[in-house]
Length: 110
Length: 115
Image (cartoon, rainbow over all chains, first blue to last red; front, top):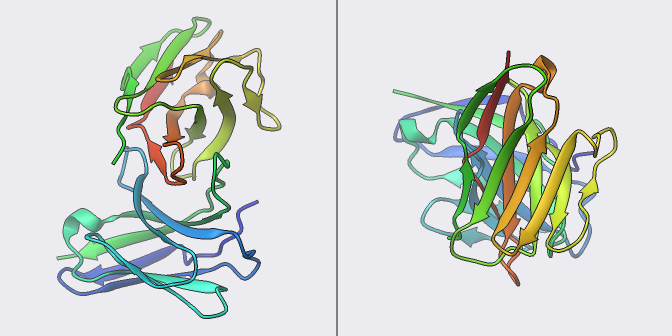
């Protein structure tokens, strides 16, 4: 079973920051938080991951709470091309199989 | 990032025929590949884990004799849907990881329609 909980859908105005929350209260010490997104009819795309520190790359920022029980993916300036289903996943690394939850469908509105 | 390709991107076949889907890692060696299936408006469901040079490990409820997986090289895994039926119509996606890196890289997917 998926180890994460996400809201089923969210809207965001174009140009504004999109903040996508994820709860992972049962995360263990060696598990990372990964975020992927899936644009309609395409394979999922890696966005960002982290263990306990906040992370930032060219696509997004990842904020992980101190107790690691939740995290937030931030798209700083959402565009229409960011409309997708966003999946938050916890995995312990290596060649570990990934279990997808239902994700959050983000709709960026013009 | 690492690139994974799939072929074909879309296939339509008659009921009872077999369909082969290829998954290739283009710029890295993939010891392990994963196969997923996704029905409309649903999340990805893991079908099996494909290991180079050994038998695949199937998830509970996935028929290994119907979904044949071959991982004969470090850059190619194939999924064959045998005796396909309309209920096998789905979006099939493969993924893999680069050695030493935990991130999974996904193929673009294959849309299978069985008439």
